[in-house]
Length: 238
Image 1 (spheres, helix red, strand yellow):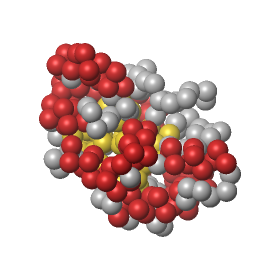
Image 2 (image 1 turned 90 degrees about the horizontal axis):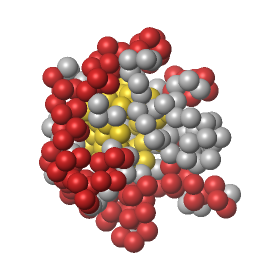
Image 3 (image 1 turned 135 degrees about the horizontal axis):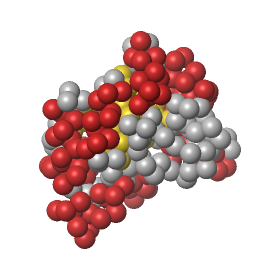
Image 4 (image 1 turned 30 degrees about the vertical axis):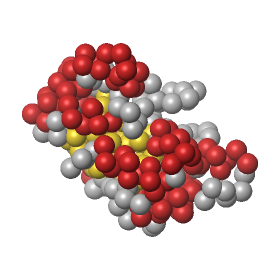
């Protein structure tokens, strides 16, 4: 079964636009779980433009499913946060400071030594590790050498080309997942997955353990409501 982890960054973005506590991020996370989400994902960035570091501490005792914290481990404050909170999973993303959103995976060959060290620290603390990678077989092989438990396939290219080239664009993701599984790596996926393209991805990517979805899901919730939207996404994963 593929789990749905709801990324609640966009809820924090709306809240921060006006200050105060509307919408209530903590309640929204609890409601997402109550409505069927099997995980909650947050991605704090150094400028705290959406999720704040304090939000992560506040969420920790409330999240009853799986808590996944994404971020750039080259930021010491991020490492400290993860080690304090000890989520079920940390997903390492090579973000630049000025990126609007994540736009590439790790070069697991160039950064192997760094990733080996940082992953060893998280795993020693009992935190499952996942690293954000492109659907490139060399990067998957490199990921295995880092000691990570899982990879998260960066799916922007799949989503961008889905309407015009879905049979072609899905192939590297299918191959990447197949290789990862053969190497003993768990497979997650995320970035621009939506109601439109999720079922096809699930059907063609073997052993998909988890998808993390935020922007599209929260946008759909504006039309369909959060509870109904989560159920619609879960249906795509069956």
